[in-house]
Picture 1 (cartoon, rainbow, N blue to C red):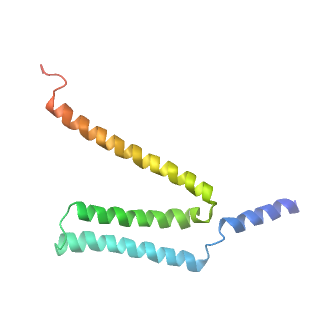
Picture 2: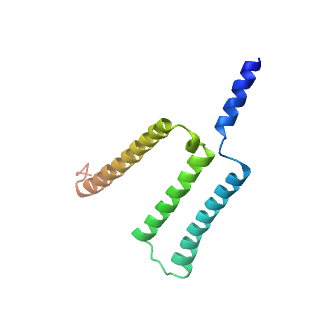
Length: 125
């Protein structure tokens, strides 16, 4: 019984070794700042003051900010930052394949959309 408690205590310590209250609050405020920046860009710069126009630049900014937020969430709150490097590489490769397949589906869907609009599937109707 003592051996099991020792293993459970060791696993609990290893699981949250880098997450103390100070780190949690710092990550929270980084995520809060990134979210506020996204709202400032969306509501202030694009819609209210019209400094930026909707388009590729704004979309790129949103994507970069969202990827930074996703990194913080996965690294700290899902504890991936504290895992072994082999597991991190494995998860990253799977994530990259998912993104690759999403891009392939979007490209293929766009091709089919334009192809089916030019050539009717049922021309007699």
